[in-house]
Length: 325
Length: 268
Image (cartoon, rainbow over all chains, first blue to last red; front, side, top):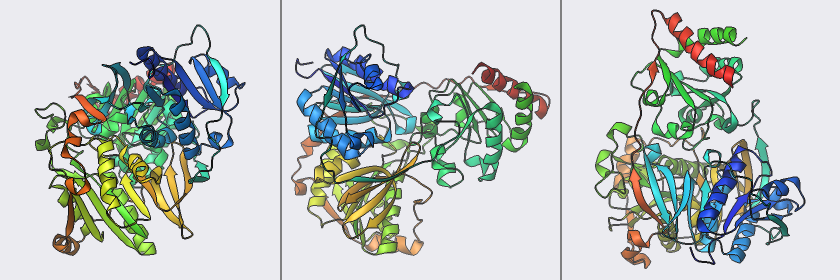
C-alpha cells in the first residue's frame, strides 16, 4: 500500500453504539491495520458528545460534523460530506455499514472519487495492494472473492456479522469539521415512518419464529405470533409471504431482507431457498417444521420435524408455555 | 411521463443448490446449469413503470446490456406492454462489472431521448452487487434513491419516491430526471403478459446498439480492466446433520421439539 493511500475512513451514520456499529468499526479498524494507515471514523453530531468519545476508543481520529441534515440522514448531504472528506484524506478505503443509507451512497461515492464499490462484504482484506472482499453470490449458492482495482475502495459491510472493534490503548483525537454538509441538495427527505415492532430490531432478536409460503395465507401467522409470545421471540417471514401481502414487509428475512443472527431460528413452512438462507446463516441454531423431508432448509438445521405445521404449532405452544412458566 | 427501465437477464436464481455448478473458468456459474430469466427486481421495476404509465400516461422503454439472448428479456418487456425496446449487444463473452455496465448503459442512454425517470432493479439475482443503479445515476449526473417501492408525481418537475427502510419507509422528493432502484413489494408484482401481447411483441423491433456504436472498446470488458474483478468463486460445503425428531406419536414428537426449543429459550 502506498504511503499516501493507507487511511481507512469508516462512515458511521448512527449515533447508537450497538452490535452493528461495533462490527462496522471493527471492520474499519482491522482493515486500517492491514493497510498500515490511520483509522478515521466520521460521524454527525458535536465533537464533545458521548458518542464521539466512544468512537475515539476505536479510531485514531474521529471527525464529527455538526449538521442537522446529517443528523436527519439526508442522503445527498452525507454523500457530499464523505466525498469532501475523502478528497482531502485520500483514503485507501471507505467502509460503510449495511443500513439503507450506506447501501445507497456506496456506489455514488465510489464514482465521485474515481474508485470502485462493492457491498455486503463478509470479509475485507488487503492482497497485492488491492482491497479484496468476500461475499455471497448467486443467491447464497456460492462465495466470491472480489478484488477492487480502483482506489479508493468503497465497501459496505455486513456490520453485525463482523467481529467488534477493540478498544485502543490510547483514544483517538476528535476534531469537528464541515465538509459542505449544509450545501443545498437536490433530493429532500419528505417523511419518515417507522413501524415500531414491539420487540425491537429483528437483527438483534435472540429467538425468531418465521413463516413461509407453505402457510398458505395470513391467518396462520397469528398462530406463529402466539407461539413467539410464549418464547418471548420475534416474528419474521420469507420474501414470498411478504410479497403476497400476508405480513408486513419489515418481517422479511433473506438476501434482500434482514440479516439475522439469533440463538434460535425456527422456520415454519419455509422451504429454505438459498436466498432465504443468506439472511439466517449467522443463526446459532436453525430448526424447521416442514411437510417435505427434502426441503433444503433441513440441510442447515440442527433439528427439525417433518410434519404439517397445523398439527404442531398449537400443541407446541401449549407445551412450551408449560415448560417455560 | 417518459420512463426507461434497465433490465438484466441472468441465470435462473431459483436453480436448486444440487443443480448449481461453476464453469471451467472457475469465475462464474456454468450457463448450462439453468435457463436465462429476467432478474425479478428488474421486473418489479418494469411493473412500477407500467403502473405509472397506466395512471399518468406517457411512454415506457426498456433497455438491456447483454449477449444475443438478452433479446428474450426485452421481448418479454414488450409483451408486458413496454413501448420500445433497446439492446446494447455484448458479444465479447466477457462479464462486465457494475461500473462497466453503468458506463455502457449511460452511453446508450445519452443517444436516446430524454427521460423523466430511469429505473433499475435493486440488485441482480446472480451477483447481487446492487451497484449499477447508483453508478448509472452518477454517470448521468442525476439524483438516485435505492430500495424504492412507490413513485408518484410532485408537480411537473419533481417526483416523490418511497424508500423501504429497515424499520418502515421514508419518502424523498427529487427533481426530474432521477434514477431509482426498485425493490420488491406487494404492490409491484410483475404483470403476466397476455398471449396476444406476447405474439405482438415478437413482431416489434428491438433497436440494437453495439459497443463500438457507443465508442466503447470491447477491451474495456477484459477482466484485468474491470474495477471489481472476480478472483475466486467457490461453492461452500453443505454440512447436513439435522436431527429429524422421531417418536411413536405426534404428541411425543412435539414434546421432544418443545424440550429442545425450551432448552435454548431458557439459556437466552
